[in-house]
Length: 121
Image (cartoon, rainbow, N blue to C red):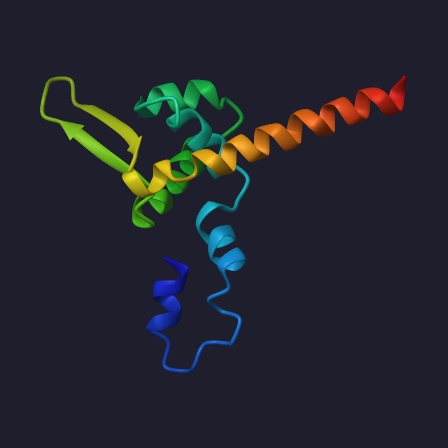
């Protein structure tokens, strides 16, 4: 999304505008996106499930984060025509490519927690 905005600018974008790290942060950055994605890696989730899994997030922010992930083609929203309406969010093929990133983050987090335990003993 952010890179698309740069492409429509009348002025030339800065030389570092398309840095891979900057792109990753633009798409996955923020307080809640990685947590939302971690739950979607387990399978499709309904909005209410995500809200229960992340109780600290406001409804407005959850909707905003899901919309941004959808615009960036990381998450797909599926609406089922039934009564009552059912909406599910799931990772796109491109979104599932974050799995190795999460494995690395989990490994780093576990190592960091163990480091903290070693320091306090």
